[in-house]
Image (cartoon, rainbow, N blue to C red; front, side, top):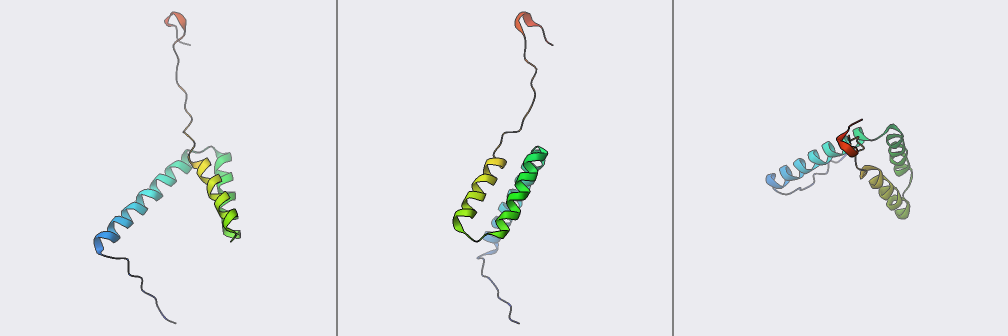
Length: 88
């Protein structure tokens, strides 16, 4: 068995890459956590489908669908003033 060693550049470049990956994972986890349950299930289904295909068009379509799910703005509720300054 042979071991391959990849040259990832200088330590500074590796540190920047590791920091970027850490941020990406953190943001992704936060986005997934804020999704409604149905969207999380759909995202999981897409991840599993990604593992089953090697077709470039399928991979691109799956990535697009995943991005659309993750790009959703978090839903929220805001109290609106009613005419006359009344609130519900």
